[in-house]
Image (cartoon, rainbow, N blue to C red; front, side, top):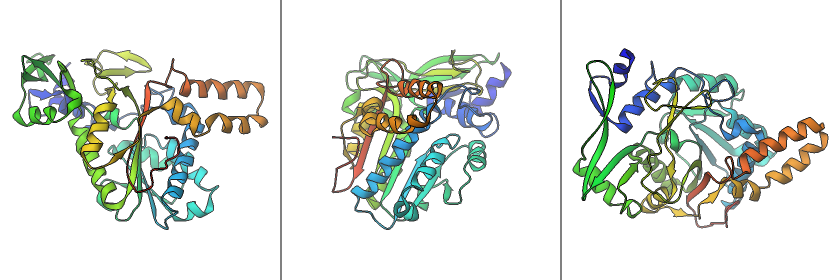
Length: 354
């Protein structure tokens, strides 16, 4: 229990987002700074690890974007939170089949964890990738930002509203190193920020991605300046209903939120209606939010599977379709995962969206 104190640094009380930021991203003892969370031996599996076809569909989508933008001679792609590099690997392999596009594209990886950066650098055996810490390194456009399970990994704030008064949830560490949940009166700035979003009106329990919005603000400004878009795929909901969605996972099983700190993953479900409102407020145009199932089907994942299954044994075919089922089925990722697209470009004919 004594290790709990390290996540509080010099403070005894921290709001939810700052506390979990320390738990997840502290360079010495944070979750993303010390272990590989992805895959069978990790704590969870992301879509690129389920099947390479997911990443192929994203590659095709990016190439069609380039065509939508008029095949510009300069084209930048930024992957947000590239994990273990699985998606970037398949993107680069897929791009090689399209020489005209491949010769002009630039792929940037935006990663906060130095530990994961080292893993990515070992696993991506290509010279035409650049790791960046700062979006100012992207100087030309158009630019595509892509994030798969990027936003859910950025810690959120939580508030309770009682008779029009707002209280923010904090964590307190006592002298025995136990962590307790307390509510403190919310700051005027945070109250004003929450009230500016219609999506959050009438809620008694509010999850607010302040840190996430700070990141997306920088991205939105870049898209407005250079033209382009952001595509994000994540799990979440369209209608908030006062739910507390903070959750912890360890070795593919649910973990109590405050147990195994620094050794278990902590995420929150994404409020897509709020995200939609955020992008609109920040000057971007929006496509209708769609399910992962609809997006991947429209992009042709089943047609692609039929092509590659021709050279497969029966057992390999079965495995392939079980994996695709995991991505598409409403019982698994198909409907829970949503796809959101915000853009600044005169042509709005984006593949996968009506």
